Image (tube, rainbow, N blue to C red; front, top):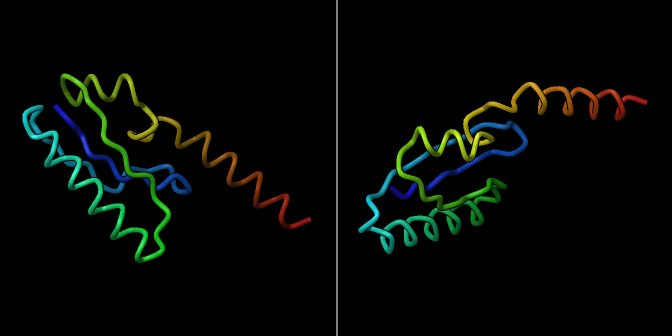
Length: 87
């Protein structure tokens, strides 16, 4: 499987994830490019990646950041930055 992931790094959350069969690599690449162009045109700063894995469960194990597992760390860092800005 091929997974197209749009990820908002500042919020530490996945915005969207699309799945493509392995036989649709070209379609997945075209979708990634189209999404990146749309995001750039709107000024949206999100990561857009294509990932390959046998299943969504395998992807969760190998790319945990896209599934919110680090949200507590990101929240802590945002809180720290907020306190620093207030000084």
